[in-house]
Image 1 (tube, rainbow, N blue to C red):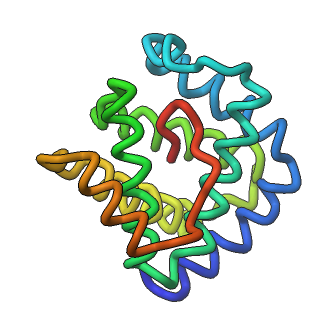
Image 2: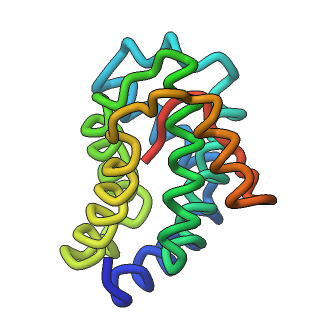
Length: 161
């Protein structure tokens, strides 16, 4: 992502974050409409899931200028999904749900340039989440945690955007 895309994502996320409950509910409606099998992975209520999702996206947005740290956080997220049996194959459904949610909440403000910036954000996240699983998830998680102390994030139980 270039500096302009990062700026666009950050500015528009502030608008979305101000509507957190609505944004999260809309996202999960869009996601489950695409892949109902994901409902089995939503162990907490959608309000809790929505809050966690927005926290995770916010953390990722804030780390866009720090790609190594972002990769570390996303690698920890990937390990959590591996342990929970969540495949990375539904990244496409998540991305489509994210873009449709943005279109609904931002209405006419979702320009082609902004849509492309969020598409680049989604691809950046999925590139890490789709990587081959490590041979030893426990050792890798320990290594990541030691490399990025204090990088705790609220991780939703279903894979976000």
